[in-house]
Image 1: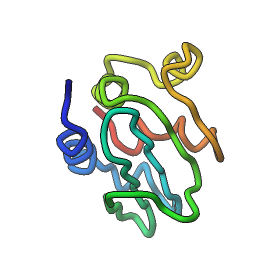
Image 2: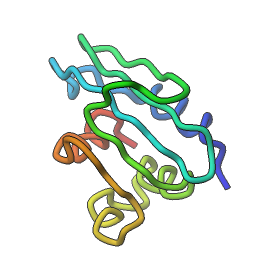
Image 3: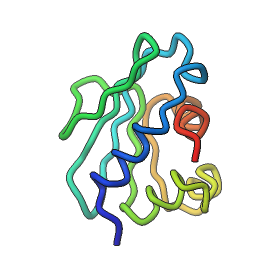
Amino acid sequence: MSDAKTIFDAMIKRFDQEAAGDMDAVFQFELDDAEDHYVMVSNGECQLNLGEHDDATVTLSMDTETLAAVMSGELDGMQAFMQGKIRADGDIMLATKLTEIFPS
């Protein structure tokens, strides 16, 4: 099993400022088998935080294995959602941009 912090650290390193553009969003990750994290994207910058945000734009629930597979490009996020491996709440269309903002 992958360590959530390692996955998020790798994700943050791959942040594509251009793809994020003028996005202002909070991606909440509720992990079934690890601590929750959230990523704030604002003004062309991103910041990783531990815990829960009070007002997330979109909340994604999954296990670390699914997170690792989606962020590495091994698993298509929309496919994972359709298979029930990812549960989403909030601005679901924003979730589809995750792999653009954090390319593998």
